[in-house]
Amino acid sequence: MIFTGGPNSVYDESSPHFDAAVLTLGIPVLGICYGHQLIAYMRGGTVAPAENGSEYGGTALHVAGGKLFSGVPENSVCWMSHTDRVSVLPEGFVITASTDNCRCAAMEDVKNGIYGVQFHPEVTNTEYGKRILGNFLFSACGCSGDWRMDDFIENTVERYKKELEGKSVLCALSGGVDSSVAAALMHRAVGENLTCVFVDHGLLRKDEGDEVERAFRERFGQKFIRVNAQGRFFGRLAGIRDPEKKRKIIGEEFIRVFEDESRSLGSPEYLVQGTIYPDVVESGKGDAATIKSHHNVGGLPSVMDFKGIIEPLRDLFKDEVREVGIKLGLPEKLVMRQPFPGPGLAVRIVGGITKEKADVLRAADAIFREEIEKSDTRPSQYFAVLTDTESVGVMGDKRTYGYTVALRAVVTDDFMTADWARIPFGVLESASRRITNEVKSINRVVYDITSKPPATVEWE
Image (cartoon, rainbow, N blue to C red; front, top):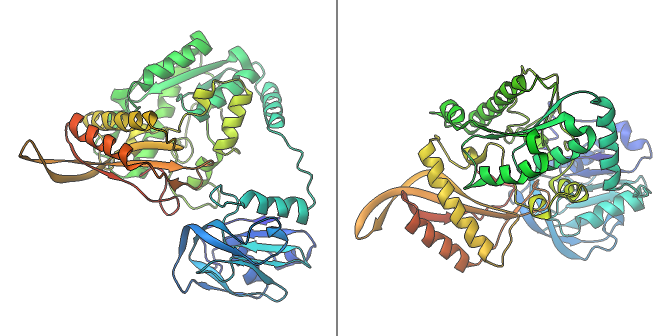
């Protein structure tokens, strides 16, 4: 049993708790972050705000021993995201790891098979996270580890072959990794009953609409439809500054476009989306805290023409989605491309959205991506953000008052956490010089060096 992390305090009456008898069942238990604190609290320990402040991001971990840390060096890096900490251990527990600011970074009651870690071993930024989880699963729990990604593909295809037999299905295709893999997976399941609709909302990257059409027209032929809906989206977004409202408007408008297209296709009953697990978590489904509503989860309208939404990748992380795509035979260039959010540049333009702003950002973003691709560095994701800040500059001995563009690049595998990319200064310098020289209205470029957490990858 694993108790996961979360934003709550164990002393808050509304926070999730469990029956303390769970810890007497003889079942191996692992608590992560909030789950670690909750185990301590339920067993009579004390949880308190950290004396030296919160810990976020990469943190030096010092291992003292214990079953979870077999094969883990004495010193490594873990990923922290907490304000409270365990200050007094419950009876029967010993400390197995610490950090400079957190005495109890890990604990165990090996007699009863109960373990807790304050950090997040499930994210790739924790150097030995897989080893720690493996020690829990295979040593503490005795699991066999015989599941394969091929099983996921086979089971998913068989499931939808049966459930959707004889039914027409429409796939919301953005051309990004997730929707592309979802389309390929569903095509294997329902074949010619699948029609892919690509909505160009005017907020794509430079030349992206044409690139998507070329790639999927060849694969799906007449079953691929491109809808140019720029006017609809810019009209709905006019004057909207709040990022949550932007996402919800875009989510609803996508559905309305798909509904319009479905009527001309004989009203397919089901809509396929490339929703993945981080989308669900960040959109606050269930009891999770809402970080941002993804257009395909929290942004969906409550009333739709479709009988149902199909989300075959909903339980997978980004690295798993890529593995599925490769196994399905999609081109590696498509599967390994960097992610692009469904709302597109709308969540990379801080404040109000206009076509003019989108064009400015499109040009700056293209330059940054060109400079990255010419270099030897390969971040997981990299893009430009048009901030809502204008500042004074000087060009041609004249005063200017132009936009500030922020460049963002991160390194990650699962996109649940991310570290900022250490791009060489020469690459950043070239990008900055070209952007300010070639893109009218921009006179200042800055680089974002914030990890996730505390930030998110996208700005909005």
